[in-house]
Amino acid sequence: MKQIGMTLGDPKGIGPEVIAKALNLLPPEERRRYKIYGDLHVTPKNDLHTAELALASLDAAIEDAMTEKISGIVTAPVNKHRLQLIRPSFTGHTEYLKEKSGAKQVMMMFGTSETTSLRMALATTHLPLQQVSSRLSKEQILSQLQLLSTSLKTSFGISSPRIAVLGLNPHAGENGSLGKEEQEIIIPAIKAAQSQGIQCDGPFPADGFFRTQLGCRERGEASARGLVLEASPLSLQTQASPFDAVLAMYHDQGLIPMKLLYGYQAVNITLGLPFVRTSPSHGTGEDLAGKDLANPQGMLAAMRLAVQLLRPLTPSLRN
Image (tube, rainbow, N blue to C red; front, side, top):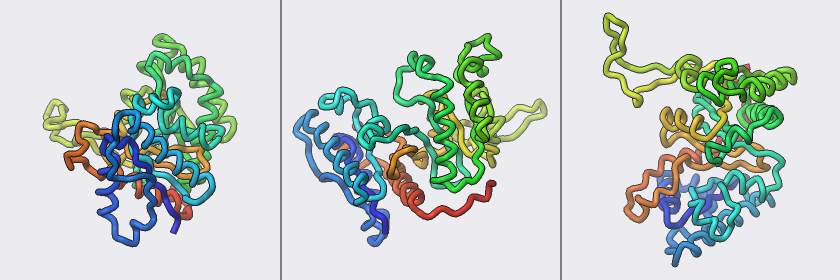
């Protein structure tokens, strides 16, 4: 049985609580797969001590993963502002794992344990929105499409993955009238990837993509005028998608539909590392900490997907 490490996250948040609850939902033999880094019952003295505990847990797990003592890591959420008290350059798990592992390139992707669900990768991660455009380049997006395509093959068993690329601007720039990034950066990157045999298409306008391309529809009754009645965002359903993954240009563009469609089942996956890493898609939840109110389903989903990613691959039905 391959072992998976679990980091505390921020001890002032719900990380320790959801870890304990998730483990208690597993049969005893399955619990033995997981190694906890740190004390789930620790009471931090102050913010500095909290940051030290969170970083020590993460560093110990990374070291064991790099020396193959464990095969993967499930990380509980951290408070970035608090960690910056001792690590000013810290912007998130993804960037920190890249630095500590020496990985050439990493990528943030969200998915679920259901093989037919949407997978959402991000071209940029933890950036202020005003910086997104300046961080995009043809070379960067091409490199990400290469990593995403390779990871879908090697980690998910999809022999011929198909990737949709979203635009940055409203209406995907509308042929340059609403922004030049699609014409000057995104489309050239897509064409370069296609010339290398990567199956990708776009850029798609993000506002309409999830309905028109993923088959999202609302439940409700149609009136004589064709209006949908009694429908709400929470009743959205997805049908089979023609794409195996979507590349969004920035954080909220990709995560809003993922969290809307899948809730706690949406799991953060880091592609490009020499080991498996997953994390629940929720935050530290400090307003719930210590009240025994935290829902462990997000942590349980991250644990299950980590196990799934460590299993021997079987060829996908999609070829």
